[in-house]
Every structure is written in structure tokens, then in C-alpha cells.
Amino acid sequence: MIRYALTRLALLLLGLLVASVLIFLTLRVLPGDIAQLIAGTNSTPEQIAAIREQLGLNEPLPAQYVDWIGGVLRGDLGTSLLTGSSVAAEVAQKAQVTLPLGIMALAVAVLFSVPLGVLSAMRRGRSDGTALSVGAQTMAAVPVVWAGMMLVVVFAVWLGWLPAQGFPRSGWQDPAAALRSLILPALTIGIVEGAMLLRFVRSATLQAVGQDYVRTAAAKGLTRNAALIRHGLPNVGLSVITVLGLQVAGIIVGAVVIEQLFALPGIGRMLVADVGARDLPKVQGELLLLTGFVLVVGFVVDLLHRVIDPRQREAS
Image (tube, rainbow, N blue to C red; front, side):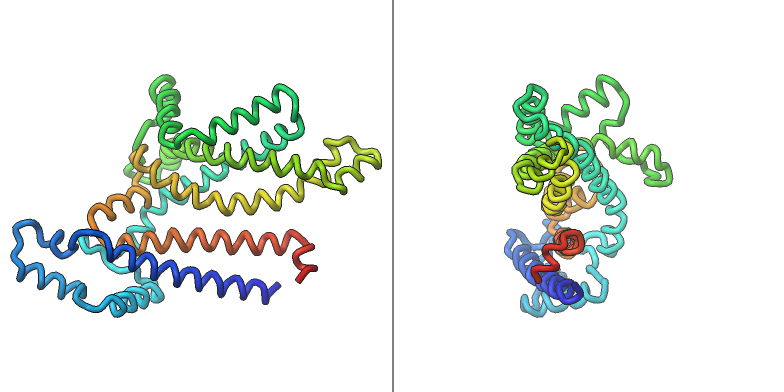
């Protein structure tokens, strides 16, 4: 187990290294000149040249990359070119919105998709099972922006139960207001992602029904549903863990869009603004952290599979 974990950790670090190179090079091919942007439209060529020299933009790309990644290894994500503030400090502040939003969205997706997916499989061929399956396929096809707008119309405009946009200025000093502002965004992401997860849970449950160990348990006196719950669902759970790891990336992408729609001051909204402003150090740091988060989730999922499933340990 330790050897396997170390191997996966080495692959994680290699993945981060490759991602950092791709992020660095991709941002360098974007059109425009950051020195020109900082200096302004009325700047002289001498002023632009001085800014480029000050920011190290005249250095070769390998030297710029080594300087940046060396700072990352020391915990320094750089300094914003436009505001002069620490990138790490700004990301940590925005994460107080994005991280709870992602956790709430994931909880919503799991809480409604797993039981309904199992129920849809167990009621296959009946009207309620068919309705759940059709409903999941419909919701999975709904754009996340449209789903958010519909939730705003119902719960914020018609019913007036929840705020339509914004986040409290006091942040988490007022937990109730902060949670209320995240409910609609979390529901928006969670319902759309949960619909896709529901379809997978239904498929995995139907596959488990046909396994020999479920049929054997049923032959020994258990009902089909009891045999499925006792012997089939643990194996379904392993598959669900894998899909949840993949859906983390979908939740991150959804957060970028939803934070714009609901005017939330999170990492996604900051990332969009920084790309438009060509603030390369901030964009580099934000993309590297988001990529690292997805890779770490995959690493944890692999370890969980190894711990939970004894067959993988025996095979090794």
C-alpha cells in the first residue's frame, strides 16, 4: 500500500509539473502586451520598455518559468501586476466562497442522485422508475446558466425565500446570510451534476443486479431488492466514488459560470476578470491551484479504491 501511494504521489507531482509548463506557455501566446496594458494607451515606447524590464518580460521564457515555479515551490504564487497584492492571499480570500460552494454543490448532487438512482434501477419498467430516468436525462441536458435563472425566478423572484445575487460584505462573520447566498448557486450546480450522476448510479445498479453474487444471495432466500442492497450496493459505491472524482472538475467549471451569474466574489469570477485584464501571475497561480486540486482529488480517489476494495490489494 505504501509503495502504491508513493507511486501515485510521484505521478501526481509529474502531472503538476506538466500542467505548470502548459499553463505557462499557453498564457504566453495570448494576444496583447501586459506592459502596454499597465502603461496605458498614452504611454511612450520608453515607458513600455521600462515596465517590461521591471517585470522581467525581456527574459527568455525558460528563465521566466524557472523563476515562477521556484516561487511556487516556496509557497509564493507571485504578485498581481495590476494591484500589487499577493496572489496567494487573494486566492485564499476568494476560496472562502468557492470552496463552500463546491462542497455544498457536491453534497446536493450526492444526496439526491444516489438514492434516486438506486430507486430508478429497482423500479425499472414501472412508471415511477421510468419517470426518474427521463427526468434525469432531461436535467443532464439543461445548461447550468438556464437552470440557475429558473431557480432565481422561482425562489428569489416569485417566493422571495432566497437572495438572487451577491455575498455578504461581512463574509462568514454572518454565517446564516452567507449560507443563504450560496444555496441557489449550490442547488444549480448540484442538480445538473447530480442528474448526470443519477444516470450513472442507475446504470451501475442495473449492472449489479445481473451479477452472480446477487443472484446467489437471492437464491438463498433474500428478495431481489434485499440482495441488491446488501451485496450489490457496496460495489456500486466504488464506481460512484470514481465518478464523483471526475465530477469535481465539472463542479469547478460550473462554479466559474455560476459565480458570474450570482455575482459571487469567488475564484471563478476572479479568474475571468484576471484573464480579461491579462494579469498573468494571478491567472497562472489560479489555474495551477485549480489543476492541482483536481489532481489531488484523483489521487485521493485512487487511494480510497485501494483501501476499500480488497481485490485490488490482492491483485498487487
